[in-house]
Length: 292
Image (tube, rainbow, N blue to C red):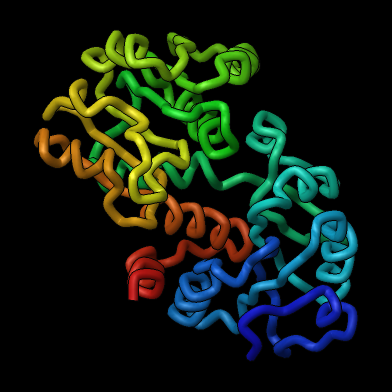
């Protein structure tokens, strides 16, 4: 089996006989989705193969048509195709309508259905990693204007937090997001990412979530000032490579509970898996496959 398939392979039907699930992206060779999904499929005895398909921008509509014709059950969508994927769907979930992007596609009855597993995956990760329910908590989302940050913020609003601080370098982006969120009694506060603004909220929040890319590279600045971290904080970094970012290292030093984005990736995958198969996958099997 090839490591990465192409649109030409789809056109020619040059795929494994039971290829029914995939991840599409450009590039896509780095994606860890196949190993964790394949492990979950095998554990449940589901005769499907999950593959990577590299798709150039502008070709998503054709790829979806080809997949539907080949009997695919669904696919995950990664950068840069989430917006294009949404535009190709016949039906959208509520989360996709709110976020404007789709990362989980299902092919059913000749129709293309779009969903987004980012928010539910994050919530499940927080429950498992920290053993907490988000209801009634005060949460700060750093980078709430980006794709992942918007999904996280939208889901947290649905979960009924007491207060939700949305921080972003470009404040206008989160102001638009805040206006679009359904009022569920959550107090939403929009702030920038300056030292003074983060200082004001640092002592008020229970959970800090980093949805920025700050921390992926050695020498990156911290997305949240170290001097405002306290032992009572729960600090979650959506980054999983490296496993311990600068933010998590400083939070550990302060005695705060920490977790990285690997669990979010796994639980996002689990949400997609259940959408496609109707079966709940073993997340321990998925974690072992992706960590090994």
